[in-house]
Image (cartoon, rainbow, N blue to C red; front, side):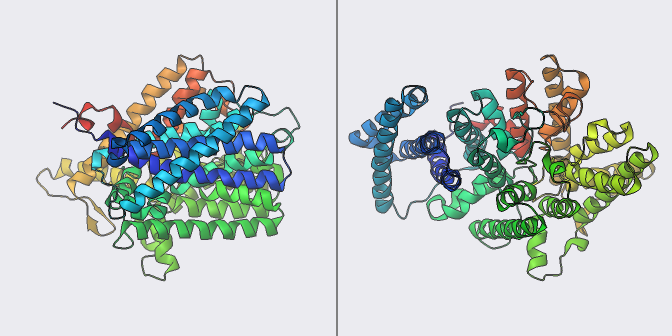
Amino acid sequence: MKITLRLRAVSGAIGLILLLFSLTFILPILVAVWYSENIVTTIVSYLVPMIITANTGLILWLIGNEVAMKEKKIFLTIGLGWIVMMAFPVAMIMPMGTQMFYVIAGCILTIILIVIFIILRFFERSRSLDLRDREAFVTVGVGWIIIAFLGSLPYVFSGTLGYVDAFFETMSGFATCGSTVLTVSNGADYLDVYSHSIMFWRALTQWLGGMGIIVLSVVVLARVMGGGGAKLFRAEAAGHRVTRLKPRIRETASILWKIYLLFTVVQIILLAVAGMTVYDAVCHSFTSLSTGGFSTRSMSVEAYHNPIIETIIIAFMIIGSWSYVMHYHVLTGKKEGYIHDPETRLHMFILGIGSLLVVLSLIMNNVYSVADAIRYGIFNTVSCGTTTGFSSANFDLWPVPAKIVLVLLMFVGGCVGSTAGGIKIVRTLILLKMGKREIQKVVRPRAVMPVTLGGKTLSEDVVRNVSSFFLLYLVTFVVATILLSFTGLDAVTSSTAVATTMGTVGPGMGDVGPACTFAFVSPLGKILLSMCMWIGRLELFTCLILFLPGAYKS
């Protein structure tokens, strides 16, 4: 069997995505200028990564372009580009004059590559990206790793974090996990140690990762991607079927991003009115709606001591964890509202019962007064149940029953088609219905009992898909926990660290509780947990396909 995966097609697709991604570095540059941060540090921290990302994207796109590869001059330009890109990390630790030389050289190279890109696109306007299903999966899986690596460069070049820590923090951001390696001394806050721009970039990675960088690429680069965009869209949500709101997948992706942007703006306004600074309101809106959980404060939401802010964040954590298809139906006045959707109803029920159990546990063990038990219990239960990861109290010190409920919620997660992680409510619901069917078949073995959801019969393919996902999720959890325990972590820390990263929640229990960070974890442990975030965000199938030989052969 020969390899039939078209690497050029994958290279071209990843190149286009990186080209769009490079533009996101402009935003932290604007924040740095607004807060009058050091201009040289700003250039090194954001402009250099922007140049590297843009050049890498353009080079990969040119490699995937047959016309470009036939032209010797373009081929030599690509070779020169790779040499400059490989030298950039070394140049950043050289004297200032050398750094500026490479920045100027990188800008010139970027301009040359952009001109070549525009010329080739002008002569190939009718040609769009042609991807097969397997190539779409490889593009998304590998693309996320590359984006996490390039997105970590601001942390590295600014001197904020080392390479492994930066990759962990960035993957946590794009996967909307919320686990962090940032540390501050007692009494200090993040903004006392880290710049406004780097904390903004940290929040922005979660906002971009919430709805999905690939989905954004499908919206912006629709004409270039063509039919390949639809396959990329499906590959980023490989664990479930993509619901089309419009005939074209680009229109569907555009609607989802518009709703996402609308909710973000509304939350920014509400948080600012409630007492947050505009900067904090923007960052927390980015990380609430994306169910990410990064905060500009080292004590997370607890630092504000404001029940109104907590209530607003609770509302938008729930909104972020519900299907954006349902949001669309509600906003457009269609009959299919939240209450008519079985998945949304079950999620509301789970959050309600979970909150009740946690509050009762806190009251019965005299941890807080009744009012405080309700306040802290509901906030942290919703935070775990939506896989956001904000904390308004150190729940690792809570009674065992409360902690068990929170850990279980980390596994269950939010709704399909939301920004939340975890196994997802609809899969849990289907598993419960499957269990009920098997019990009934014990009594009536010959009866035909299809699994239904929302009045519709599910095919056996869907049922089998859910069973396979659940089994693979548990196997991955067990294997990752065992591997992590070899790095010296205890059982509670290892298991909850894997659970919280696979579920893209953020804090765990034990040494990785809400009052702690992942900074003490060994480099190998951080890489393993970064892969758990990657697997959890792309919902297993897209990632595991990369390790199957059949994905690359006919």
